[in-house]
Image (cartoon, rainbow, N blue to C red; front, side, top):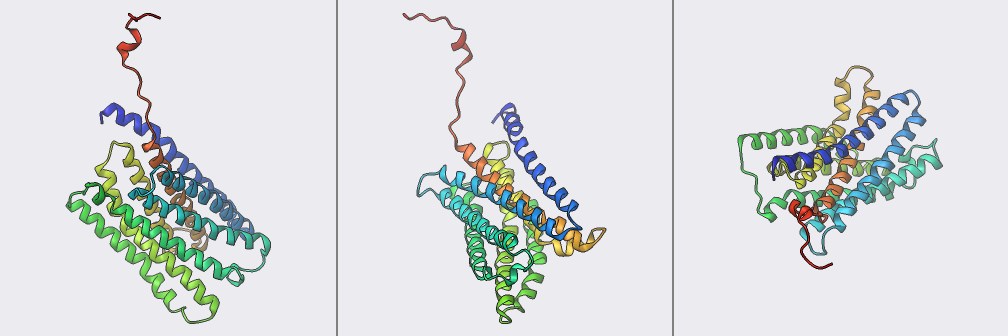
Length: 298
């Protein structure tokens, strides 16, 4: 790929990432404005959850449909699409209860068992798909070389995954076997945490492939996936990160909760970029064809 074509590709991609940033900032500013009003804050998170969830479903399904049945990457994007759809179902369950019975916490809702099943299935589907995605370079013959930088990235992501996940796992395991509400809430948290730890661990190989493919359209797919995984890292670390930031820890935690928007929207963007990369490209006619006089009969 020439430098000019690489610049054109980057120029066409940057607005998409800028749009993700705008959505993230919109959610963060709306949440900041509603920090003193819990019902309004819940509504802000609800609207953002629907918006980002729908974009994730749209993008991943578009990517899955761009491959033929039986293709390896169709399995990858099919799994991601299934996870995004089930995550949206989870959002729908919480949203329904928020609007139907706003004065009763969702943990006391009869919908909690259904959400537990949906969350577990969503995380299983997403984790399976991400493992397949991280192995894509092996299937395609692209294997990033092992370097000091890549090994350091692996070490950092492994430490980050353990630092974020182990305290949550230790806490939630103690809740298993208690009341039915405590057990179901713990199962939801354990499934989400284990899946997010896997996602964080896979950031290293995903970003390694993105760096190796730099300059091409497919590289942006991997960059979007890698940054999405990084957003989930900060999202999962929001509890202890909130205490390190200036200001009220509870309010900081609500602001960090908005990073879920970037995690989901970047997943949808990765799917859309995958679809766009596979779309047939129209080739302009050679320059001499436009100026060469015709010698044939009309």
